[in-house]
Length: 202
Image (cartoon, rainbow, N blue to C red; front, side):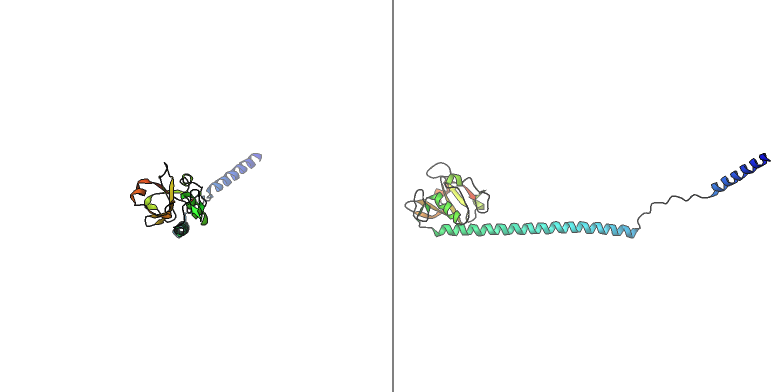
């Protein structure tokens, strides 16, 4: 009988094993690919984000350009005011070492006029030549400083450009503060450079 029970047990186990082998195991779930509509939506969102970034950059650039234009317009306005102030003192006497309305030398004149318009520059022409932004004759704007070599080597004389090729300077005891012309042979031969101090870091 024990032998019979063993045979029965083996038969039952074999039967159960066969049944378990016949049962289908569930196939692993495949990765669900996005449906076309979902892909289209994601692409549209990416495009919208890119367009938003482009629009932001364009707005920033536009604002930067506008601020730059405003700053340039303000510099030109101050430069014109400097030029007008210089022209106002035409006829003032020349005084060696003079720095006030009763009499000027060339660098005392430019220093005084610029200070009246909120711009501080050094006292003598050589030091004034080393401040501001270098500009060419073609770039000159009212309010720029123009330098010449006259009674001494280097930038020993200067004036304030007022436009139209003209500048105002404290020339000498005979003429005082007067107007000069950059195209005149005397000044053309002695011109050594120009500086823009209006709006420049000194």
